[in-house]
Amino acid sequence: MKKILIGLAGFLILAFITFYFFSRPTATADGAYIPSPFALKLATSPTTDYDNTVYENPHKGNKKVLMVCTEERNMTMENGEKFSTGNHPVEMMLPILHLKNAGFDVDVVTPTGKSAKIEMWAMPGEDEDIKAVYSEYKTKFENPGSLSNFVQNSMTDSTDYVAVFIPGGHGAMLGLPENKDLNKVLHWSHDNDMHTLAICHGPAALLAANLDGGKDSFIYKGYKIASFPDAVDAQGPMIGYTPGAMPWIYGERLNKLGVTIINEAADATIHMDRKLITGASPQAANAFGKLAATELLKAVNK
Image 1 (cartoon, rainbow, N blue to C red):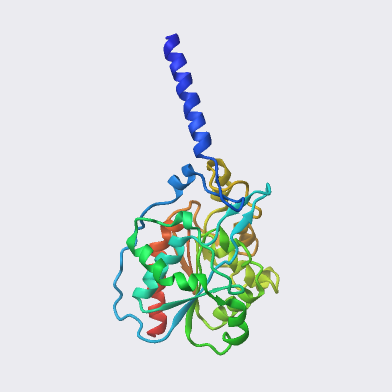
Image 2 (image 1 turned 90 degrees about the vertical axis):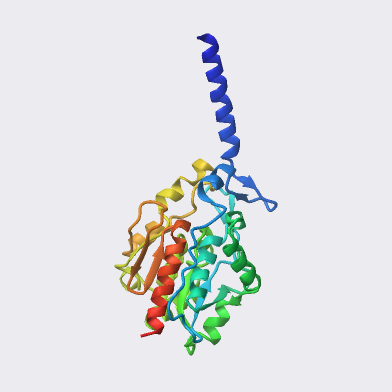
Protein backbone atom coordinates (compact mmCIF):
# COMPACT_ATOMS: atom_id res chain seq x y z
CA MET A 1 0.00 0.00 0.00
CA LYS A 2 2.85 2.34 0.90
CA LYS A 3 4.47 1.75 -2.50
CA ILE A 4 1.18 2.51 -4.22
CA LEU A 5 0.82 5.79 -2.33
CA ILE A 6 4.41 6.76 -3.11
CA GLY A 7 3.83 5.95 -6.77
CA LEU A 8 0.60 7.96 -6.82
CA ALA A 9 2.31 10.92 -5.17
CA GLY A 10 5.09 10.77 -7.75
CA PHE A 11 2.59 10.64 -10.56
CA LEU A 12 0.71 13.65 -9.19
CA ILE A 13 3.92 15.63 -8.77
CA LEU A 14 4.98 14.79 -12.32
CA ALA A 15 1.52 15.73 -13.63
CA PHE A 16 1.67 19.03 -11.76
CA ILE A 17 5.12 19.86 -13.11
CA THR A 18 4.06 18.94 -16.64
CA PHE A 19 0.92 21.06 -16.41
CA TYR A 20 2.88 23.93 -14.89
CA PHE A 21 5.36 24.11 -17.73
CA PHE A 22 2.87 23.39 -20.53
CA SER A 23 0.43 25.99 -19.20
CA ARG A 24 2.99 28.80 -19.02
CA PRO A 25 2.79 31.37 -21.84
CA THR A 26 5.68 31.18 -24.29
CA ALA A 27 8.04 34.16 -24.52
CA THR A 28 8.64 35.88 -27.87
CA ALA A 29 11.77 37.63 -29.11
CA ASP A 30 10.42 41.08 -28.22
CA GLY A 31 9.67 40.17 -24.61
CA ALA A 32 5.95 39.52 -25.06
CA TYR A 33 4.14 36.18 -24.69
CA ILE A 34 2.03 33.95 -26.92
CA PRO A 35 -0.35 31.35 -25.46
CA SER A 36 1.05 28.29 -23.72
CA PRO A 37 1.23 24.91 -25.49
CA PHE A 38 -1.70 23.80 -23.31
CA ALA A 39 -3.81 26.83 -24.28
CA LEU A 40 -2.97 26.41 -27.96
CA LYS A 41 -4.06 22.79 -27.77
CA LEU A 42 -7.40 23.85 -26.29
CA ALA A 43 -8.07 26.98 -28.33
CA THR A 44 -6.63 26.39 -31.81
CA SER A 45 -6.96 23.75 -34.49
CA PRO A 46 -4.86 22.75 -37.52
CA THR A 47 -7.99 22.82 -39.71
CA THR A 48 -11.31 24.69 -39.89
CA ASP A 49 -14.87 23.78 -40.77
CA TYR A 50 -14.86 25.85 -43.97
CA ASP A 51 -17.40 24.26 -46.31
CA ASN A 52 -16.73 26.07 -49.60
CA THR A 53 -20.34 27.17 -50.02
CA VAL A 54 -21.36 27.94 -53.59
CA TYR A 55 -23.64 31.00 -53.78
CA GLU A 56 -26.31 31.29 -56.43
CA ASN A 57 -26.06 34.45 -58.48
CA PRO A 58 -22.80 35.79 -57.00
CA HIS A 59 -22.18 39.52 -57.23
CA LYS A 60 -20.78 40.60 -60.61
CA GLY A 61 -20.34 44.30 -59.83
CA ASN A 62 -17.74 46.34 -58.00
CA LYS A 63 -19.13 46.30 -54.46
CA LYS A 64 -16.47 45.59 -51.85
CA VAL A 65 -16.03 45.05 -48.12
CA LEU A 66 -13.78 47.34 -46.08
CA MET A 67 -11.91 45.24 -43.51
CA VAL A 68 -10.49 47.28 -40.63
CA CYS A 69 -7.55 45.54 -38.93
CA THR A 70 -5.30 46.43 -36.04
CA GLU A 71 -1.73 47.57 -36.66
CA GLU A 72 -0.73 46.99 -33.02
CA ARG A 73 0.91 43.77 -31.83
CA ASN A 74 1.29 43.77 -28.04
CA MET A 75 -1.41 44.17 -25.40
CA THR A 76 -0.15 45.24 -21.98
CA MET A 77 -2.00 43.17 -19.42
CA GLU A 78 -3.08 44.28 -15.95
CA ASN A 79 0.18 42.97 -14.44
CA GLY A 80 2.37 44.74 -16.99
CA GLU A 81 3.23 41.64 -19.05
CA LYS A 82 2.69 41.89 -22.79
CA PHE A 83 0.47 39.57 -24.80
CA SER A 84 1.51 39.08 -28.44
CA THR A 85 -1.76 39.34 -30.30
CA GLY A 86 -3.25 40.92 -33.44
CA ASN A 87 -6.19 39.76 -35.54
CA HIS A 88 -7.12 36.08 -35.48
CA PRO A 89 -6.31 34.42 -38.84
CA VAL A 90 -9.39 32.16 -38.92
CA GLU A 91 -11.68 35.10 -38.16
CA MET A 92 -10.07 37.01 -41.02
CA MET A 93 -9.54 34.38 -43.70
CA LEU A 94 -12.60 32.17 -43.38
CA PRO A 95 -15.12 35.01 -43.81
CA ILE A 96 -12.99 36.35 -46.70
CA LEU A 97 -13.35 32.96 -48.42
CA HIS A 98 -17.14 33.20 -48.22
CA LEU A 99 -17.18 36.84 -49.32
CA LYS A 100 -14.99 35.95 -52.32
CA ASN A 101 -17.28 33.04 -53.22
CA ALA A 102 -20.18 35.48 -53.17
CA GLY A 103 -18.33 37.87 -55.51
CA PHE A 104 -17.10 40.52 -53.07
CA ASP A 105 -13.51 41.67 -52.92
CA VAL A 106 -12.10 42.80 -49.58
CA ASP A 107 -10.01 45.93 -49.08
CA VAL A 108 -7.73 45.93 -46.03
CA VAL A 109 -7.02 49.05 -43.97
CA THR A 110 -5.31 49.79 -40.66
CA PRO A 111 -5.46 53.09 -38.78
CA THR A 112 -2.34 54.61 -40.39
CA GLY A 113 -1.46 52.07 -43.10
CA LYS A 114 1.08 50.11 -41.07
CA SER A 115 0.97 46.34 -41.60
CA ALA A 116 -1.98 44.40 -40.24
CA LYS A 117 -0.89 42.33 -37.25
CA ILE A 118 -2.00 38.68 -37.27
CA GLU A 119 -1.90 36.02 -34.55
CA MET A 120 0.21 33.63 -36.61
CA TRP A 121 0.31 31.20 -33.68
CA ALA A 122 -3.40 30.59 -34.37
CA MET A 123 -2.93 29.87 -38.10
CA PRO A 124 -4.50 26.50 -39.02
CA GLY A 125 -1.42 25.03 -40.68
CA GLU A 126 -3.16 22.03 -42.26
CA ASP A 127 -6.06 23.95 -43.80
CA GLU A 128 -5.21 24.42 -47.48
CA ASP A 129 -8.07 26.85 -48.14
CA ILE A 130 -7.02 29.17 -45.33
CA LYS A 131 -3.36 29.00 -46.35
CA ALA A 132 -4.27 29.77 -49.96
CA VAL A 133 -6.35 32.85 -49.19
CA TYR A 134 -3.72 34.07 -46.73
CA SER A 135 -1.12 33.81 -49.49
CA GLU A 136 -3.44 35.67 -51.86
CA TYR A 137 -4.02 38.53 -49.39
CA LYS A 138 -0.55 38.60 -47.83
CA THR A 139 0.49 41.69 -49.78
CA LYS A 140 -2.65 43.52 -48.65
CA PHE A 141 -1.96 42.60 -45.04
CA GLU A 142 1.64 43.77 -45.28
CA ASN A 143 0.78 46.94 -47.21
CA PRO A 144 -2.79 47.87 -46.28
CA GLY A 145 -4.55 51.11 -46.99
CA SER A 146 -4.78 53.84 -44.39
CA LEU A 147 -8.10 54.24 -42.60
CA SER A 148 -7.21 57.87 -42.02
CA ASN A 149 -6.68 58.46 -45.75
CA PHE A 150 -9.89 56.60 -46.56
CA VAL A 151 -11.89 58.87 -44.25
CA GLN A 152 -10.27 62.05 -45.55
CA ASN A 153 -10.31 61.25 -49.25
CA SER A 154 -12.73 58.46 -50.13
CA MET A 155 -15.42 57.78 -47.56
CA THR A 156 -18.03 60.48 -48.20
CA ASP A 157 -18.34 59.95 -51.94
CA SER A 158 -17.65 56.23 -52.05
CA THR A 159 -20.36 53.93 -53.31
CA ASP A 160 -18.02 50.99 -53.79
CA TYR A 161 -18.57 49.42 -50.39
CA VAL A 162 -21.38 47.28 -49.10
CA ALA A 163 -20.03 46.50 -45.61
CA VAL A 164 -17.42 47.23 -42.96
CA PHE A 165 -15.76 44.16 -41.42
CA ILE A 166 -13.86 44.08 -38.11
CA PRO A 167 -12.21 40.69 -37.47
CA GLY A 168 -11.49 39.41 -33.99
CA GLY A 169 -8.42 38.56 -32.02
CA HIS A 170 -7.52 40.56 -28.93
CA GLY A 171 -5.83 43.00 -31.32
CA ALA A 172 -9.25 44.46 -32.09
CA MET A 173 -9.04 46.00 -28.62
CA LEU A 174 -5.79 47.81 -29.50
CA GLY A 175 -6.14 51.24 -31.04
CA LEU A 176 -9.52 50.68 -32.69
CA PRO A 177 -12.02 51.36 -29.86
CA GLU A 178 -10.63 54.89 -29.44
CA ASN A 179 -9.96 55.61 -33.12
CA LYS A 180 -11.73 58.73 -34.39
CA ASP A 181 -11.55 57.61 -38.00
CA LEU A 182 -13.26 54.33 -37.14
CA ASN A 183 -15.91 56.40 -35.37
CA LYS A 184 -16.61 58.15 -38.66
CA VAL A 185 -16.58 54.91 -40.67
CA LEU A 186 -19.02 53.19 -38.33
CA HIS A 187 -21.41 56.14 -38.48
CA TRP A 188 -20.98 56.28 -42.28
CA SER A 189 -21.85 52.59 -42.55
CA HIS A 190 -24.82 52.94 -40.22
CA ASP A 191 -26.18 56.12 -41.82
CA ASN A 192 -25.92 54.63 -45.32
CA ASP A 193 -27.72 51.41 -44.36
CA MET A 194 -24.62 49.28 -44.98
CA HIS A 195 -23.81 46.11 -43.11
CA THR A 196 -21.26 46.00 -40.31
CA LEU A 197 -19.59 42.66 -39.54
CA ALA A 198 -17.70 41.95 -36.31
CA ILE A 199 -16.58 38.63 -34.84
CA CYS A 200 -15.14 37.46 -31.50
CA HIS A 201 -13.30 40.49 -29.99
CA GLY A 202 -14.16 42.57 -33.06
CA PRO A 203 -17.23 44.09 -31.35
CA ALA A 204 -14.84 45.86 -28.94
CA ALA A 205 -14.08 48.21 -31.84
CA LEU A 206 -17.77 49.19 -32.01
CA LEU A 207 -17.05 51.29 -28.93
CA ALA A 208 -15.42 53.77 -31.31
CA ALA A 209 -18.92 54.74 -32.45
CA ASN A 210 -19.48 56.33 -29.04
CA LEU A 211 -16.47 58.64 -28.93
CA ASP A 212 -18.56 61.73 -29.57
CA GLY A 213 -21.63 61.01 -27.50
CA GLY A 214 -23.21 59.49 -24.42
CA LYS A 215 -25.13 56.30 -23.88
CA ASP A 216 -28.33 57.61 -25.43
CA SER A 217 -26.64 58.49 -28.72
CA PHE A 218 -24.78 55.20 -29.18
CA ILE A 219 -25.86 53.88 -32.57
CA TYR A 220 -25.88 50.28 -31.32
CA LYS A 221 -27.93 50.93 -28.20
CA GLY A 222 -30.56 48.20 -27.87
CA TYR A 223 -28.73 45.78 -30.18
CA LYS A 224 -28.11 42.14 -29.40
CA ILE A 225 -24.79 40.65 -30.49
CA ALA A 226 -22.69 37.48 -30.33
CA SER A 227 -19.21 38.16 -29.02
CA PHE A 228 -16.32 36.66 -27.05
CA PRO A 229 -17.47 36.58 -23.41
CA ASP A 230 -15.70 38.57 -20.70
CA ALA A 231 -15.94 35.52 -18.41
CA VAL A 232 -13.87 33.43 -20.81
CA ASP A 233 -11.25 36.16 -21.10
CA ALA A 234 -11.03 36.09 -17.31
CA GLN A 235 -9.95 32.43 -17.50
CA GLY A 236 -7.06 33.23 -19.86
CA PRO A 237 -4.29 33.41 -17.22
CA MET A 238 -5.37 30.10 -15.67
CA ILE A 239 -4.46 28.12 -18.79
CA GLY A 240 -1.70 30.42 -19.97
CA TYR A 241 -3.61 31.82 -22.91
CA THR A 242 -2.73 35.31 -21.71
CA PRO A 243 0.17 36.24 -19.41
CA GLY A 244 -2.10 38.21 -17.08
CA ALA A 245 -5.59 39.53 -16.51
CA MET A 246 -7.21 41.73 -19.15
CA PRO A 247 -6.35 45.44 -18.94
CA TRP A 248 -9.98 46.38 -19.52
CA ILE A 249 -13.29 44.58 -20.07
CA TYR A 250 -14.92 45.43 -23.38
CA GLY A 251 -18.15 43.42 -23.02
CA GLU A 252 -18.94 45.21 -19.81
CA ARG A 253 -18.50 48.56 -21.55
CA LEU A 254 -20.82 47.53 -24.37
CA ASN A 255 -23.39 46.36 -21.82
CA LYS A 256 -23.33 49.78 -20.15
CA LEU A 257 -24.09 51.37 -23.51
CA GLY A 258 -27.17 49.20 -23.98
CA VAL A 259 -25.76 46.25 -25.94
CA THR A 260 -26.76 42.70 -24.94
CA ILE A 261 -24.32 39.83 -25.57
CA ILE A 262 -26.46 36.75 -26.17
CA ASN A 263 -23.89 33.94 -25.74
CA GLU A 264 -22.21 32.81 -22.51
CA ALA A 265 -19.57 30.57 -24.09
CA ALA A 266 -16.90 31.10 -26.74
CA ASP A 267 -18.89 29.00 -29.18
CA ALA A 268 -20.37 28.96 -32.67
CA THR A 269 -23.14 31.49 -31.95
CA ILE A 270 -23.85 34.02 -34.70
CA HIS A 271 -26.46 36.75 -34.70
CA MET A 272 -27.87 39.46 -36.94
CA ASP A 273 -29.60 42.52 -35.49
CA ARG A 274 -30.69 44.90 -38.20
CA LYS A 275 -27.54 45.41 -40.33
CA LEU A 276 -25.06 44.31 -37.65
CA ILE A 277 -23.78 40.72 -38.05
CA THR A 278 -21.72 39.24 -35.22
CA GLY A 279 -20.11 35.96 -34.16
CA ALA A 280 -18.83 34.61 -30.85
CA SER A 281 -15.45 33.03 -31.59
CA PRO A 282 -13.33 31.28 -34.24
CA GLN A 283 -15.82 28.41 -34.00
CA ALA A 284 -18.43 30.76 -35.47
CA ALA A 285 -16.27 31.94 -38.39
CA ASN A 286 -17.72 29.63 -41.04
CA ALA A 287 -21.36 30.33 -40.20
CA PHE A 288 -20.55 34.03 -39.71
CA GLY A 289 -18.97 34.19 -43.17
CA LYS A 290 -21.92 32.41 -44.78
CA LEU A 291 -24.45 34.70 -43.11
CA ALA A 292 -22.48 37.78 -44.11
CA ALA A 293 -22.12 36.64 -47.72
CA THR A 294 -25.82 35.74 -47.97
CA GLU A 295 -27.01 39.04 -46.51
CA LEU A 296 -24.68 41.13 -48.65
CA LEU A 297 -25.98 39.38 -51.76
CA LYS A 298 -29.54 40.16 -50.67
CA ALA A 299 -28.55 43.80 -50.19
CA VAL A 300 -26.97 44.26 -53.63
CA ASN A 301 -29.65 42.24 -55.43
CA LYS A 302 -32.62 44.16 -54.07
